[in-house]
Image 1: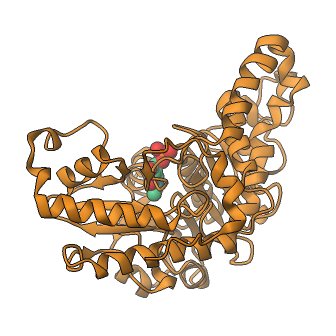
Image 2: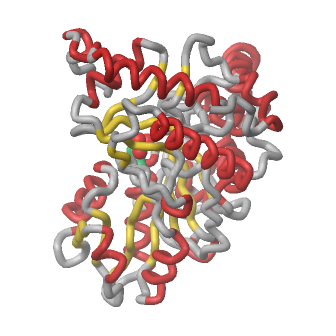
Length: 405
Ligand SMILES: Cc1ncc(COP(=O)(O)O)c(C=O)c1O
């Protein structure tokens, strides 16, 4: 395979990622690597801002507005308007707020439709909300995607789906599903965990109601970096189900009663992590001026090249690929079904090819256009073929499950 760079324009950015030289990093779908900007900003927040300025940092460095300013950085990448995205809490908490807002906006409808194979937290959160509200006020139907595609939405309050399936890498038809659900009067809530930073979701253009996501995957915000919440401007009169003081119209008046702030700010709850938000903001600044369409094109070229290299090698050619091959249906990862997936993933990691594993037999290879290159693909496929041929994955050290897979 050619080792020609797919995206020479990104070379400077790639050089800023601190990926150890002996590693091929194909796990940006789980945790993006550290970029120099994020390192420098984090150190500066610790030393210059918190260290030197102490509590004055809230005003002097505008810490208080970070959820909005970093949210605006995310907004550009997901095709939303400024003032429609907050960066705060984590995806799970934001999902709880978004689902509750959707039920309120679509009263008297009470039905949440979600996909049976959705990322587990999304369905746990929906069930938790239903248990809290009680059967007359909220019920959850977790259905197969094929059923959702044909569903009558006339009694559905909100459809909650992942844009890209975390197991298979299947990209869903966001415009068509949004339109179909809305034409039946439902609201639509998208989980963008695996799309933000690699696929243009064009939220405004597609008239999406609500969305949630995280910044630690393809946005490289760091382990456990904050989530984000998108609420279309037309829905920002909805209530925040966790109405904390940070979402109050006048926080420092310390009023006895809650009065929600105008706009997206009302969906804040408590004090956010300044250090984590600043790091995420610095990581997002790496994407300033980069067109998301260019990133998508580069991601597809990487995953195409990976599929071609797998097909060209006699040892890997027969491996089942769970990710759909049409570009319109593919996210930014390739998921392979390997019966010995766990030990094979561990053997790859030992050789410096960083991937991850999802039960029961899925090895995921994530493609991040900001830092992956064609040479990564050559190395990954060569390592995978050799591991399968030599059966070295049978060694006991590869068969002991780590807590995080
Ligand atoms: C698709 C999807 N949704 C939700 C989550 C959970 O996000 P968080 O733990 O940040 O709340 C993840 C985490 O990886 C995910 O991949």
